[in-house]
Amino acid sequence: MSWDEIRLKKFETYAFVLDYLPRGKIGPMRGSFRAEPLIQLLGKSYFTLLDAIPRTGFTLSLLDRVYVGKEQFRKKVSHIIGRIEYDDLTSAAKSELPIVVEKIVMNDEKKFLNFFNIARALTPRMHSLELIPGIGKKYTRTILDTREKRLFSSFQDVKERTEVPDPAKLIVKRILEELSQFSKYRLFVRPP
Image 1 (spheres, one colour):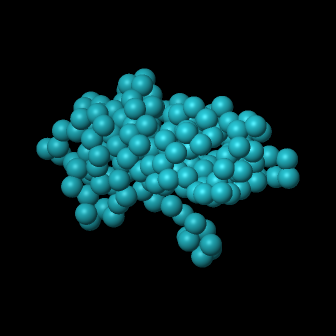
Image 2: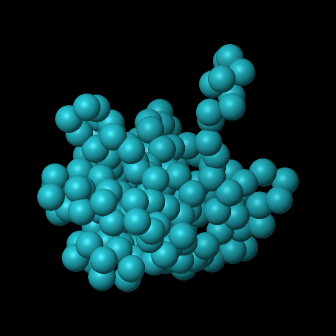
């Protein structure tokens, strides 16, 4: 692995529990059967979907925030099995996903607001703002003109100054699209 690959590799520190399976998954998983407890997680920083094994003696609930960083500091997670795709999520995990994504976006408004303040063109004909559902060329032009005068200070500021309906919900919708569908451009989710 080259230095650039190591430098660009992104690891999650915290994740949210999407589903807790006390008896594990039924059927083959990564080449073997697992009858031990399993948790499905969504990483907080890069929206990485993960399968993990909880530590013995800990019961986890949906939406719990758990540390998944360096192994020696994990209290509730024994080990990470690996990354998974959206289609590998249980139906319960899929139903919790929008709630968790919205929670992450709302709790870190500054990070996601910054997208509206610094987003750039992807190609001469397409701006990254246009990848947000509901934002076309007209809203893109309005956002660019408005932020040139003064950067946005909150989602409410974006909404009031540009008339973009609920910018936070639009960001959540884009993240869910990036998690559940193939996307040539990823704005928020770690590439596979």
